[in-house]
Amino acid sequence: MDIFLGEWLNLLLRWAHMVVGIGWIGTSFYFMALDYTLMKRERMNPGVYGTAWQVHGGGFYHVEKYTVAPPALPDVLHWFKWEAYLTFVTGFGLLIVQYYVHADAYLIDPAVMPLTQWQAIAISAASLAAGWFIYDGLCRTKVGDHTVLLALSVFALILLASMLFTKVFSGRGAFIHVGALVGTIMAANVFAVIVPNQKKMIAQMIAGQTPEARFGAVGKQRSIHNNYLTLPVLLMMVSQHYPFLFSHPQSWLVVALILLSGGLVRHILNRLDAGDNWDGYGWALPAAAMALIAAIYVTAPQARGAASAGAAVTDKDALAISQKHCVTCHAKQPTHLAFREPPKNVALETAADMKRWSKLIYMQTVQNRAMPLGNQTGMTDEERAALGRWINGSR
Image (cartoon, rainbow, N blue to C red; front, side, top):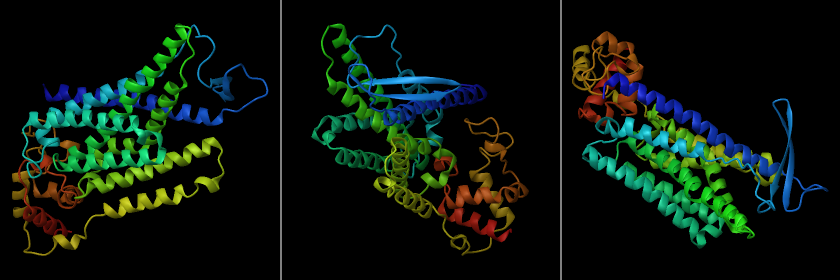
């Protein structure tokens, strides 16, 4: 595919993914908050669990929620499912365009595991499917009857997957696959559990039967799971712009801290919506803060002095390293098949160019080791250290 058209396809998929993702997450936040604002009132229709009065956009709304289902099926029933389906479709499309098509640059790191493009793609697709089936199996066992035990089990599943991903893919590829796994679980919850259960209840009503409450209870459980996973998955999906997250040798630990901080913040917001007493959940705020501080500490760069020991590096030496490892992409006319122009418009063809972008080079190449992409050119630790000494000495 032409590079220019490929970039447009990437952009349009990313734009669509953001739009439908915002819609899906917005409905998740709204309906969780709605459930918490339902109140018992003196006059309610038969079978109603609670009602809520709301005001928005210059109008008033009166919402009722039934304990199981209304006595009769309404003529028009609005479903909330396409946002979830399209979020997955556009997200998987991005995975294909960005990581499958350019697997050598973004997904594979020969130093981690020497894979062919198709091997990496097969592992990717199989791992996402396996993750869903394992999660779904946990929910359907006796573990699913115990909220805390299930939460710990899902937490362990995601951490195990993240550790395995770091043994197979590049740091960038591993971290995005954690986000893709969580997103797959969330979308499959809607597609394979929540919506089918709602359809079963409707089918029972059409047949003149009383809908079974268990279908709604299971659907609600999965909906709550999705709600608590939203904040962590959002950070994981933008992680590609912040290499310090995935370049850490134990990036699974970063994943754990993101899950904890994001999940706890979501818990705080939910309890606020429910109007609970702060004493019952206030502990979650310092716990979330500690997890976030720990993540910052874990991802903190090493002291620059670590790259200072050794022989002095001249401009000529630094430029030779750049010519060998950087200008394939970072040139005014890149030769790398994935780029038509230098990424972020950063060209590194002269010593002056390198000095101009020295801070970025240090962060991406010396500290985070995120460049070259997938280390396709085989940059050594000695060359990274030499670049660090040159940058420190040129200031």
